[in-house]
Image (cartoon, rainbow, N blue to C red; front, side):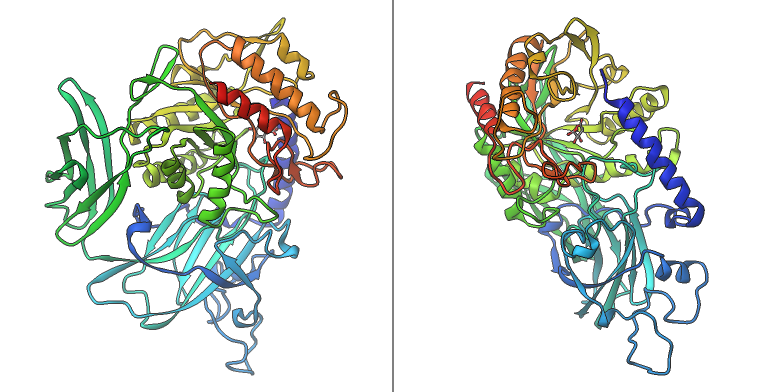
Length: 610
Ligand code: GCB
């Protein structure tokens, strides 16, 4: 009863398509080892920074001319696009590109929804931003990118300074000594072509939005600065303890961690570690209490808002702060309500989270990749718990060490950015990955990595179900031995049978673990009405939700949470039914314009009783 076979068929076609194009054009990644960036500076919002958002000039380069001229044969100055020269400066010179004359794209933003001609574009595109700056003496500077999908090669004032792979996590590159006093030219080569060895791989059920999709900043820090820190709570026999570490670039000595509201201030040891007894008010959905936390060294100071909570499982129970909790959730793709593409502002994050809250949610699954930091922080302020995941999706190239390194790097960057967020209770390492020896060992290593990076949270993956016949369904996946939850996607009534199948389906599991349904759902066009048995009508979807929630309520042993698929209709290049899908996955509980479908109220009603 898996949908893997159809996924595999499509994958085979996609691999063939890629292999065919590979014969003609070697991908840029073949020449570039992935990731040449500086260590990630966390809590970027609290640092002194200069925004580089706004209009950036762009040149689409499907034949990668600007790249290959540069990489393979560094010709005369001006033959690569990192060199920013004007066609009017010397009218006798042969110049075939000129950023000054080019059109602009807004950053942050995907290119697909900004220009009609780029709607389906997947390939190379060059961005350029000119900015004036006066670097101060004794300061260090980093260019910070919230996310660039999928690969970025960054050049400053004509020289390449770093590159990054992975479309949903932040990176920064040190530019101390490379910034000019006065005018600077920043050029970023962005590439979003799909590749079978990438993470995600070449097929996904979401739009492959290209571009500099999150904010760009020039960050100023002192010579010795605070790079990262972890501030967590742990339970001990003699009471609670707040503990963690401070990591600095340069001299860490004398770092202090203060929580004024608790009247605490402690010095970290020489290695940056600290711990102290404390009994803070605990963060939970009903009371999303955050404390001002100040990390200070002799030369630097960073302020954060941090919440404290315990999350654990006991047998089939999920406990938050020692009490059983049910995760009333919904899955969300990082896409604006309306006709736009990727979320680009805090207001757009809020609009999505407000809808989740209106449905009665205390939990969201931020699918299928790390969402922007505002989304996580806003949810934290609103008392909404989070399942955070990386785009290890469907049929990744399990045998490829480079693919593993890429996935592990994205996991590391995600955990590094968000490890101080109290609302994240689950790191997920994969979605719907067909079982095989290679996949198991790949994911076991990722699970271990997640636990090593952060021992305070649960780790899981969205698994697939197994049909035992006669309505009996289970999950029989070796991953369960290592995950904290049995979490899985079930599409009873949509991909399997009609909604009535839910009336007789029941789930049991061998492992004594909490059960989490990471997806279920049905598609409908908002406002389309008809017979309850007719697909794509709100009636069918509503009926499926009524029967599905009935099944979940009564016939799933150990259920601790659900995140139906999905809050909002979202764009997908796999969804082609004209007049119905029109490039959208229609399983949203609200339409892409934000109109609530009747199934929204089924969930609201069910959650109000949980
Ligand atoms: C799934 C995937 C999700 C798809 C969904 C669907 O199982 O995890 O990414 O969008 O099914 O609508 O088919």
